[in-house]
Length: 373
Image (cartoon, rainbow, N blue to C red):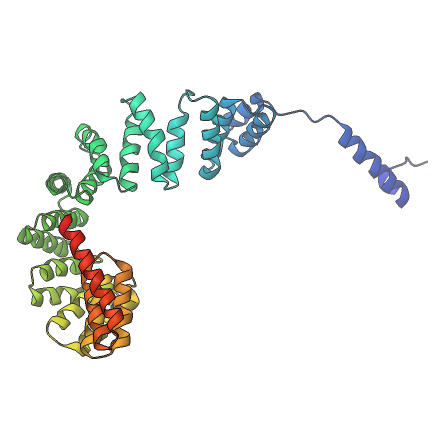
């Protein structure tokens, strides 16, 4: 006599018993996960399971600040920073004095590139604990990322002085000085970097930019040339050196550098635009037009290319094309007077006196504002 088995029962019996089994399972009490469960998962580095356990804990007790903080930490450990941030913020809302959470929040925002959002918590941690080097370094770098360069220098300079061997910190400080237009500071910092790494192309280039900012043209050129010897095919290097020559109206030397840049990168918009400008200066209108048209295709936000192209088209009496180019130049920087004035001249040549007067009036208005500054 064989024993009865579930698998050999008739079809209707199996269906009936399956239904009873499902009801039985649903009726079983499900043990709620506890902080102890979450901590056990954490001990085994099972961050996803730990996070789910903490979610269950905060769902039952939405006032548990420590649980929200732990949830944020386990999410951050999975690099789910976007989810971690609301958990950290909830924890701080419930308990602003919860240790370590502001630093974790600042770090999570920083790692997402949300530098402005990272500043407040990191500044708070730095004020409460000036010895927290991590918080101060992150704060300085967040200021840099948020383009608050003067504040970045104030935070990063003492740290760099304290740890001069930290090359990453030194470079961010030097770049902050440069972007904040504190050129003596930038010079000093880049010289320190070059003492440690004399073949650093980036340091030579940035030091050259600092010299250029101080209008020390010969020194700027020398640094760019040194960088070019170290790395002749460095992207944008010849273009930047060409720009310094162009500023000094040394057009033959500028043209040589821009052409070298295009030999490395035929689509370099800046090199194309400034070569076009040089050809315009020399009244080679067809050659200028060709270079400038190509520059606008590769650099749709490069204002000089549109301004010069409009000037070329105006001289060639291609007025609709000139209007279009000048209008784009105005879009890119409406506070500059030159494009408004030249657009007025084009409208005048087209016989549209009303439009011309509007542009001339705008030119006068902008001039008056500049004089008052």
